[in-house]
Amino acid sequence: MHWQPHRAAGVVEARERHEGWKTAMQQGGLEPRDSLAVECHWSASTGERAMQELLRQEPGIDAVFARQRPDRVGSARSAVAAGREGAVGCCSRGF
Image (cartoon, rainbow, N blue to C red; front, side, top):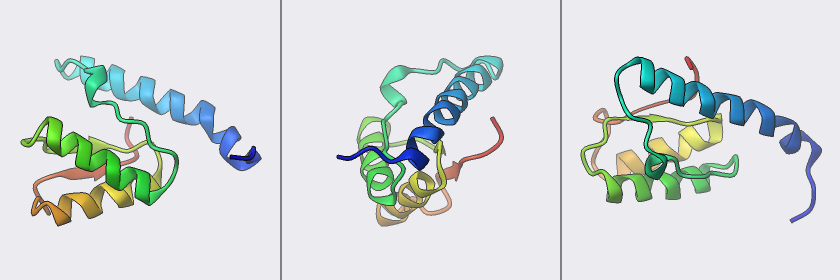
């Protein structure tokens, strides 16, 4: 893979969003388990695969925080394909 400056610039923001997710989980009385953090690479296809993995790990999952919009799109596709449309909320803002 070659270096892509526009993506490298987003790394800091993605880390900050991840830290925000962890903080929000803790403030809500929930444990931010590392096993539920699945790496995506700013694409719908990796978001889709990540959601498939999360649904295997936690079939009853009802919310997903995607750090980038393409990740969220892929996550939503997998939720629909798994028959979980409306049962799993996917967001990328608010933390």
